[in-house]
Image (cartoon, rainbow, N blue to C red; front, top):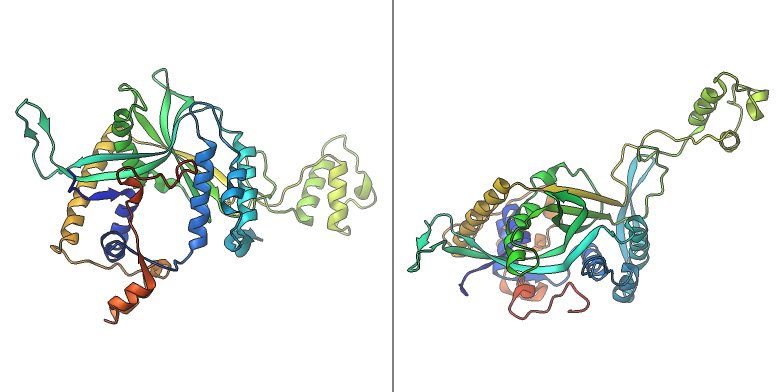
Length: 404
C-alpha cells in the first residue's frame, strides 16, 4: 500500500487538459520560480484560509471575522490585482489594491450571509485519503472469506467545509454536504457544474472518508456539494429590481416612460415639470430624476446583459449513488492511464490550444518544441516542490492558520 501513487483531483484535471504540463508538475515536480497570475492564486489561497478560520465550528461556533484574518495574512502584500467590471455593457479590465479589495469583499460577505447560522459545521479544511480499486482486476477472496479489491491509487484531497444544513432535510434529517469556496475573476454560467468532476469525486469518496474518520454516522451520506462563489472584483453596486436582476443606470428615456405611465393613471394630475410641459423632453436628466423621486417612483434602466456580476453566488450540486459509483470507475481508469504515461508505456502528449498562453509552463513548452529545452533552463527557472506535501504523514495543514 505504501508504494501506491498519490492522486489529487486537481491533478486529474491537469492531466486531461495537457499531459505534458501534468508531467512537469506531478512527475518531475517542478514549478516556475516566477509564476504567471500569482496574485490571483494568492488572493484565492488567503481567502480560503480566512473562511476556514471563520467557519471553525463545531456547530454554530464561528471564528474571527474573515476580514481580520485577511489583514493579518495580507497586511504586508503591496501589489495590485487585475479585475473585470462591466461599464456600459462592456467588460473593462481594472487594477485594484490587493489588500483593500480583499477587505471589502470579506466584509460584504459576512453582511450577505450573517455567518450562515443554518450551517452546523462538522469541520473546515478536512483532509482525506481513500484507496481507489483497480477496476481491471476482479475482487479477491481473503482467507477469512472477505471479498476485497486491489487498489490502484490513493486519492487524497482537502474538503473546504463539511456541514449539516439545517435548512435542507432528507428523510427527516439535515442534509450533509460539502461546501467549496471559489474565488474567481468572473462568475459565469454554472450549468456545467452538473458534470463537473470535483463534486463528483469528492462526493463519491467523501462519505466513506468521513465515516471512517468518525465525522458522520454510518447512516449518513454526503448528498452534494455547494459551490460558494466569490467574485474577485469591486462590489457590484448596480441597482437591482424586484427579481434581483441587475439594471443599468436609467437614462432620460427611462424617466420619461416611467413618469408618462404614472401621469396616465386615472385621477393622477400632472405636477411639477409635467404640469408645465407634459412632454418633459426639454428637461435634464437630473430634473427628471428629481421629479420621479417626488412622485415616489423607482426608475431602472434596461436589464443588464451581464447578470454574472453579483459578487456572491451559491449553487448546490447533488449526486446520485449511480453517479458516485461511475466516478469511482473513471478515477480508476484515469489512474491506470497515468501509470502508463508515468512509466513510459505511453507517450507524454501535448494539447496545444489558445489557452496555452495562460499555462505556467508556456515558456518551457515553446523551448521544448524548438528542441532547446535543457537542464540548465529548467534548474534556473523552476523550483522543486511536493504537490502532495499536505497529505504526507504528520504533515502540517497549510490551509489553516492554527496549523500552518
